[in-house]
Each structure stands twice: as structure tokens, then as C-alpha cells.
Image (cartoon, rainbow, N blue to C red; front, side):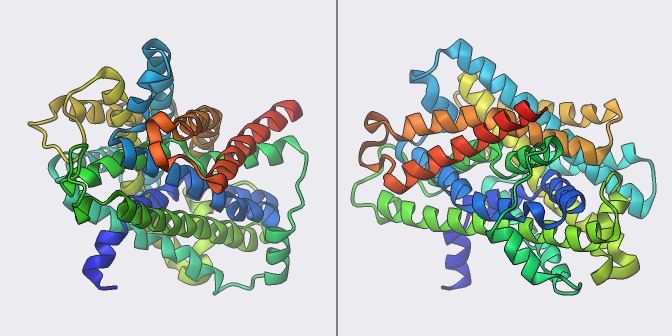
Length: 419
């Protein structure tokens, strides 16, 4: 496959998967490894098929209907109920992106000094500039290359003494602990991995891709570029690779945190400096540099996804006629106003003074709380032949989607009982 075809073949799924390992994911995976050693490694394995199924269903829904998830729910859910759900979704995203921005600013302060608010304003301006003034094609190209910053955690694992036998046993033969703290971490891991904003973003970006390719409801049947079967094949591969790489990175972050932190008695990660200690074996005194660059890289990737997915959902429920990253500021002014407002609101949440690491974990739990409802809505839509036609869920998709719903719901119920 040529480089040009590679860039075309892999798009929304790869970007979505990479954005899943955002600062919230890095903090949650690091804390899981520090607090429980190898005991949560199995989560990174078991969530691969469920996460892939949810993202594939989101992509397939958008491909068939040429609409996002929220817009597809108009015929199923009263607008008032849908509006409440979207506002809750947006609120969780705002808190999540605020936690991400706070972690980026705290990490930059650790490395380069200056007050944290200076870095917060700096990243705010950079991210809003990228979203507002780059067209969709160039913006997506930037996001794809930021994925490379995630490879540092894989390299670290091969520079430290890892008990690979124990790690393999913990991955494939999990020993689940029915303890409140363990299930809280499990909920956070599921929330930061199978995150609701990823489903909305995946569907929205599929629509954007179709617009960029000149495809719509009226595209010709003989148009090879807009052949739904060929597009679905590419999207499934894109999603599978993106979700697989995301979870591999998550597995390595937990592994290295367990080896470097847990094994040395550091069970609670509460500062960027402590989180950066995971990278000391490979970077030594430059560990903070590597950690900060990783946090900033993934944050630049994830914050636009968080604000963008919420803006898509709000635009659809409001009924804006023109919205999306493929539109210019002049064409979709109100869409970009929503993006701006959400991002600034997220930055303002850092004024609450929450510990940046703990805030990221709280954000992951918030995602877990609303994920089951969105997964259930996605199942109902993709099971409906009136919506999907011949592209309704197959047996495997049906099993995995319901499995994702039961896994998310069951973990929340058990955590609630234990609490």
C-alpha cells in the first residue's frame, strides 16, 4: 500500500483511537498500574472487541444515514428528552476537556516553569486556532501524525525488567477483586476506554469524510468513490486498527506503571512528576520532558475531539443548518461559537482547584456513567431495518454491542453495591 493510499485508508478510526489515549486515559491507566499492579491488565484486552464493535456501529450508522447519532435519534426520542441527554453529554465533555487542559498546563509548568494559567491560555489559543482556521482535510492530517507520540510507552516496557509471565497471566487469567476501590478503578478504565464522546465523534467524522469525498444521499449508484460496500470495508479496517492500537498503548501504560511505580511502593499518583516517573527507565532525568510531550501531544489530539463531539451533538439537537469542521467560520459561525464556548468553559473548570490527576480520573468515571445509555441508543438504531436497511447488525455485532452495554452497566452496578 502506497503512503498516499495509507493516508486515505486510515482516517477517523485511527484518530478516534489515538484520542482515546488522552491525558485522562494516561492518568487513569497510570493510576491503575500504580494502585493494583498487573491486576487490571485484562481490561485493556477484553475491551478491544467491545470498543471496536461500538465504533464500527457508529461508523456504519453514519455511512448509511449520512447523519450523526443525535440526529438519528430524533425519530426515537422526544426532543426535550434528547436535549437533556445532549446537555449531560456536553457537561461531561466540558469537565473532561478541562481536566485534560489542566493536566497539559500542569505538565508544562513542571518542565518549563511559568504559572499554570499562562500555559492554560496558551494551549487554549493553539487548540481553538487549529479547530477554527484549519480546514477539515488539513486538520485531520495533523491529528493523524500526533498519534506517534503514544509510542513512547511501548518503548519503555522493553527497557525495564518486566515480569512477563505474571503480566501474561494477569492479562489472560484475570483475578477480579470485589473491592470498592478496585471496581471504582474498573469503572474509570471502562469510562476512559469506551468513552461516549468517541461514538459521537466517529459518526460525525464519517459524515465529514463523505462530504470531503463528494458523497451524499444523492450520490450515483455507479460511483466507485461512494460505493457503500467499499467504504464500509475501509472503515471497518480503520476502526479495528485504531481501537486495537489504542488498547495496546493502554496495556503498556498499565504495565510500565505497575513495574516502575507499584513495584517500588508508589501506589497513589497525584502529581505530573509522579506520573512522569514511569518514563525514568528510558529517559532518566529527561523523563519529565518525554512525559510532558506525550501529554501535550495527546491533549492537542483529544481536546478538539471532546469539544468537537459535543458541538456536533448540540448542533444537531438545536437544528443548525450548517455545522462541522469541513465548514469555514463564515459558513458555520454558530458551530464554531459552540466549540469556543465549550472549550473556554472547560478551561474555567480548572479554577475549581482539583488535583489534575484526580480530575482526569473523575472525568473517566463521568464518561462511564453516561456510556450505557448511548450504547443502548446505538443498538436500537443499528438494529432497525428502517434506518439501516441491509446494513443492520450482524450476529457478531449484536453480541458485542450488548456485551459492551452489559459490561459497562454491570461494573457500575457492582461498584454501587460495594460502595
